[in-house]
Image (cartoon, rainbow, N blue to C red; front, side):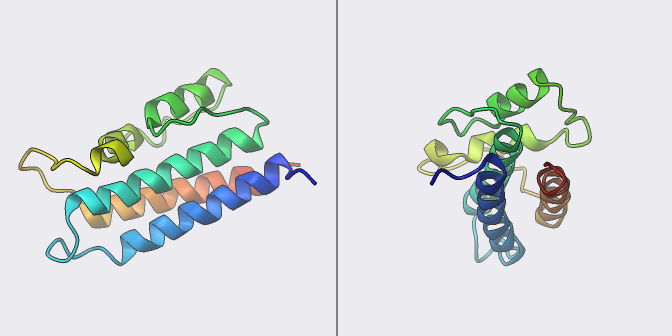
Amino acid sequence: MAMSDKDHALQLLEMATRDHNALINMQDPEGFSDEIFGFHAQQAIEKALKAWIAVGGLTYPKSHDVSILIRILETAGSDLSEFPNLEDYTPFAVQYRYEMMMGDEKLARNEAALEIRQFLDHVRRIVENHP
């Protein structure tokens, strides 16, 4: 039996929540590099975006580019203006895990975890309220 769009979205959200839970436990930059923290941040965002796309009955590409997923939602009429920083995490996608991130700017981990939690909560409300 095929999974409904809503069930698929809920499954993606559960996986996104697991990535977010990892972020909560990776607040120590001595224990976890920005690349690892950023990877889980990107994964949580990617999965939540795909959940939002799925519950709308749309399809998403096999891509880790957050920008592409955002454009799909915006083209369908969704408003993501409340979450302007999501695309900042694309460089942490899978293909970049094998490279050191350059630059002196460190991730603001507490703020990132809070922002992603708010985004996941937003998407969860959309999915749960979908018929």
